[in-house]
Amino acid sequence: MDIPIDVIRRVLAYLDTATIDRLARVSKKWFTASRDPRFWVTVSLRGKVVNKDEEILGGFDRYYGRDRLRMAKVLELKPTRSHKQLNNLLLTATTAYCPNLVELRLTGCLDVTEEALTSFLSTTPHLEVLKAGSCWTSADLKMTHLTSTALLKAAPCLSHLAKVDISGWGVTDVGLMTLAKECRALTALSVEGCLLLTPKAFAPLCALPHLRFLDVSRVFLTRDHWLALFPPPPLETLLAAHCTLHKPTVRTMLSRGIAVHVPHSASTAVIKHSLLFTCPAAAERALDEWFQY
Image (cartoon, rainbow, N blue to C red; front, side, top):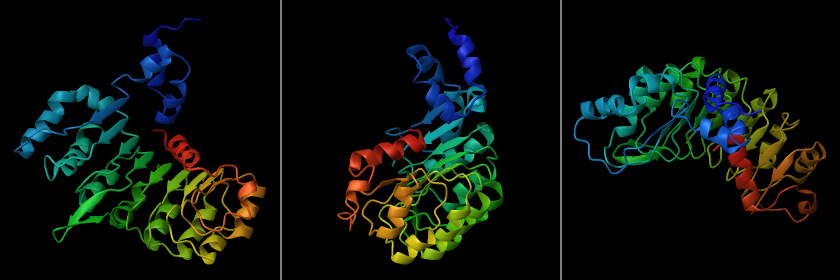
C-alpha cells in the first residue's frame, strides 16, 4: 500500500521522537517524512558574529518561524564560542517559543549556566529526553562542569524524563538520588565520568521499575558500588568501560540476561568469555541506540 507522504507526516506528528526514529528506518519515504522540520529543530549559530542579545533572540524567531518552533519536538544547541551567553539566551527563548519540546540536546555546550538550565527544565513540562553530557559553565573565571543544582531546583518538573545523559557532570549523591526519586519513568541513564558518586547514590536506581540502560563508565566503582546495584534493576544493558569489576555481581547480571559492556575494564579475564560485548565499538553502538542519536 502506497501511503502519501503528507499522511505519514500527520501520523508522525502524534508520536514521540523515539518512535519517529524507528519508523524512519522503514523506507526512504518514511525517512523523508520523519525529517520534516516540524519534528526536528537544530539551532546552530556557529561562526556567526552576534553583538546584541536582542539580535540573537530576534533572529531565532525570524529564522525558524513562530509556527514551526511551536510544533518542534527536538532542540539541539551546538557548542559555540561566538557569543559567551549564546546557549543561555537560546535556552531562555525556547521556553516561550517551543512549548512542546520533548527532547533537548546540549552535549558539549559551553557556558550553560545552572540558572538557565533550571529555568528551562522548570518550564518544559513535556520533556522526555535530556542529553547534556560534557556541558561546561563559568565559575570564578574558570570553566567547570555542571553540578546537581539544576536537577535539585527543577526536581518537581522532572517526572516525564525517560532518558537522561549527565555524563561528566559534577553530580553528587543528592542529585542522583533526587533524579531517581522524581523520574520514575527513567529507561536510560548515563552518569559516565561522574566521579563524586558514592555507593549510597546507586541504591535508589534498583527501585526504578523501567530502567533498561545504565552507563557507569569511568566512575571509580568499588565493591560497595556494585553491591548497591544488587539486586539489579530490570536492566537490559550495562556499560562499565574503564571500571574495576566485582565478578560475582557481574556474573549474576549476565545470568539474568543483562548485556554487560566492559571495554578496557580491569579484571575481565575471568569472565570475558561470558560477556555479550567487549569491544568499544559495541559499547558505542549500545549508547547510541538507547539515546536515539
